[in-house]
Amino acid sequence: MPRSDSAGAGGGRADGEPAEDEQTNAERTNAERTGGERTGGERTGGERVPPHRSLLVRLLATSVLIAVCAIAATAWLTVRTTTGAIRQEQGRILADDTQLYDALVGRAATHRDWSQVDRLVEELASRTGRRIALTTRDRRTLADSDPKAPLPDRVSAVVDPLRVAPAGSTDADHIDPRVIGPYRLTADGRAKLRSAADRIEACLKRYGAPATRTDQPSGRPVFRIGNDDAIGYKIIVLCPTVELDTPTETERRALDRLNALVAKCLRDRHEPPVGVGLDFIATTSTAQDCVDTARREQLTPYVAPPALLFIGDAQAPAAAAVGLDLSPANTTRIAGVTGLVLVLTVCSTVLVGRRLVRPLRALTAAARGPGDRHARVPVTTNDEIGRLAAAFNDLSARRERAEEQRRAMVSDIAHELRSPLNNIRVWLEAAEDGVAEPDDDFTTSLLEEALQLQHLIDDLQDLAAADAGVLRLHREDVFVRDLLQQVATAHRAAADSAGVTLTVRTEDDPQLYADPVRIRQMIGNLVSNAVRHTAARGSVEVSAVRAETGVRIEVSDTGHGIEPEELPYVFDRFWRAEKSRSRSTGGSGLGLAIVRQLTHAHDGAVAVHSTPGAGTVFGVTLPVVPADRRRS
Image (cartoon, rainbow, N blue to C red):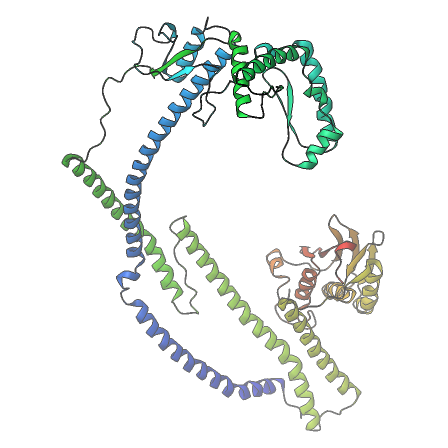
């Protein structure tokens, strides 16, 4: 007589109860030991925190230190800023004086006299806010921005374009380059030189020779190059500048006059004659001195006579500025302001610190609570602390859901394994007692139960591999139409026995780069699920169409559908539409979970739409992998 299922099940539970009790007692002992240690830790953590470890004290100390540093930095910055402002003002005054001097020298270099210089002086005085006066050497006024005020006692500079000091030099014995005199080119000469310069510049660009083109005050274009011998070769040989080096008729006459004056000067000094070109450079210091003297003699008629420049303030200050002194009153005032800043810093820090510490203490207490309680904390603010509390609550909720899912999964796996094992045990006990004969039906029944166990274990293994990211895919070119036909052929017998019409429909013949075995497993699970939940005289259709992002495969049925509140859990493990776990209406509950994992492994997406009483549509979208992105 075979043993009853209840007896077998009860015997199984009875056999397992001692082990379960022993495990429970061991876990309770470990929990008590761990809890005792944790309690000790909590006692240690619950004691008053040393002052130097308190967040509030550290925040207060940091704020005070910052305030002291800020005050010291402000004082240092004030001194540095004042010093910098004084230096900046001195630099601005010096720059203004230099601009004034340069503007007046330029005016003298381009005019033969100082007539109508008043407008320039007024403009410069208005722009700089300085008093500007220009006189002859005998102090006769030529222009003055404030004629009612007496002239300053000290001359600021002598405006003489034939004797100027270049920037950064104290040698006031140079001729301003803006003094042109008889070397000014005519309009026809300028046009010819400009045309020659354009041709040379185009030549230099063609040969890649960098050179800078500038126009001298006389209108003559010149090219300036570096010290690279290759560039010099390109200019001398490939792009000759003979046209630019040759003086025009106007310049030749002026050079003849200059050379005559230079020759006379050298004869008086008993020096050999030299030739002077447009660069006005001689080979010896004596010859150079004669060149400069001759040029001044030649250019004197073309420039304004030397003048004295006086620069002063626009108006004398009414009284000297009074600075901050460190008198007892000012010292007391500074100390009072400093103390007030410190008091405000301490009070604000304590207030803010308390508000910061309060929710942190609540979070700490909730985190230290029992692991199975899943405590929540109130969210009272919308700042960083409030977001931290909301994140903690969300983490606690997810942990609680994960724990519930773990328990449900363990229960479901135990149930799925218990049923076939119990059946195998009952049949084997029946055979042992001589009640059942080990014939073909007996062997077939045991084989079916073993295959069911093997199928469940294979599903769990596939899910574990997918979760661990070690599920290997053997991709190859797959024609979707052939693959769907293979799946339909494999499930047609089951569909016919259930009275369900199974059809396949494809548009064109889309192609994928995927693992054909896994794709057949994925679509087969969907087809098997659809056939199982479709009543007789119903239909199941497998279709494939091209989508924007790849190929979309749909499995639609005319079954009883899924309730809207159940749709979010369709792809959960061990989920079934019928909660009775009856094998006549459902499988192991892992098929749809495997579909989702295999779809994600192919970088695809799966979705479900269902109308209760009308049917369900499962859609899988798989991307088309370009040939250049395929991995071997």
